[in-house]
Length: 257
Image 1 (cartoon, rainbow, N blue to C red):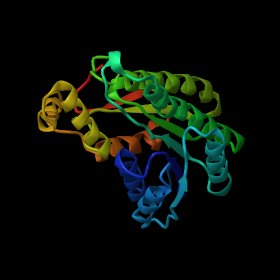
Image 2 (cartoon, helix red, strand yellow; image 1 turned 180 degrees about the vertical axis):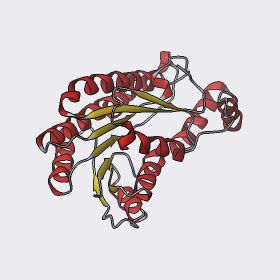
Image 3 (cartoon, rainbow, N blue to C red; image 1 turned 30 degrees about the vertical axis):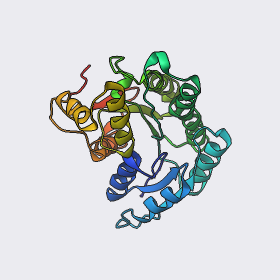
Image 4 (cartoon, helix red, strand yellow; image 1 turned 180 degrees about the horizontal axis):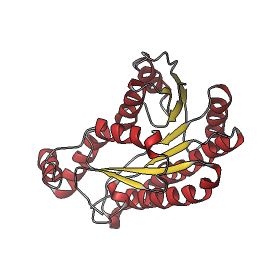
């Protein structure tokens, strides 16, 4: 039987790689993004060899009513087997200069959005008696503070890992597993912006910063979105049904705990 997964922030970057890999492996995917056109474009490119009928929906993860509508609609029509809270943003600035409006926006999307979507997905799963799986995208920056210019992002991702554990503990009685996945230096449009920001803050070039990131990764290359997508498929598989509350590092050894 085809299983259905909802992925947030799936119009580009890591999210797009996630839904592409999941579709290739037979999942029916509901692509969501705050950018509806990006979600539509992505959904139209997905593999349908297993007879899937992929869908797309506009979703602002900070909107509780919108998240509930998506979760309930999918649960009632298709069955909600898995939910991946992947949407996130970043902004680079020195801690002393970080504007509070940027901090609030980062927390709203990266942490509060994961809470809102996780709650909506879990409520729908419990209501329909689906022993589903929830995965939250965190970061290796959610496990260490030794990262410059990303204090708000680091705080939000530490929060995601803690929230994941709390969700896993409380939802276990319903047979729902909850884990997080922790990428490293990933080659995405967001990373391209971060390269420019960090280069400016360090007074160097984007190429030099990128080499710093590669040098910081024992496996010796920049991580690709597909690296995370493949790890995600494991967390959503039956092989991982007795794993919950974990933060899976997928970073080429850039941070080991």
